[in-house]
Length: 117
Image 1 (cartoon, one colour):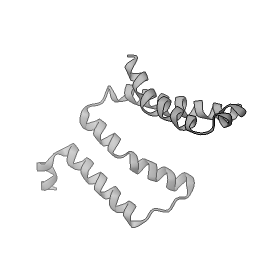
Image 2 (cartoon, one colour):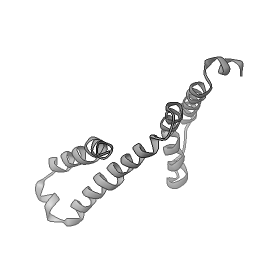
Image 3 (cartoon, one colour):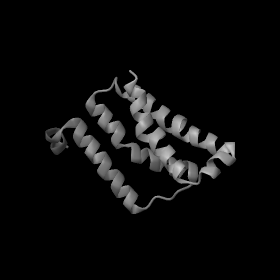
Image 4 (cartoon, one colour):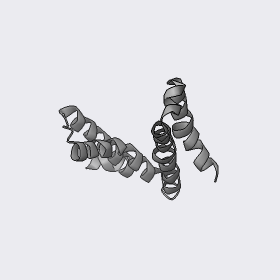
């Protein structure tokens, strides 16, 4: 539906990005078309479009599966930063990853089965 596209656009891409850009000098936005193109690319393609596709994909999942996927998003971000950007992970990252994975396991298999492990 149209709401699947409009809500992510307004929530992340359109309104917040345009407000941030508009708070900068108006002349900086209009003096170079690269600035405006980057603004549109960031707001529409990398934010709103990805939210729209994510909403479509999450329709076919059960709530428990969606919870696991969305809860592990910080882990994927840290892994990408480590591999692609050479970021180093500290102990706090490892502890956070263990907490996230434990919560996902607990959510997926239930408390009674988790206690028997």
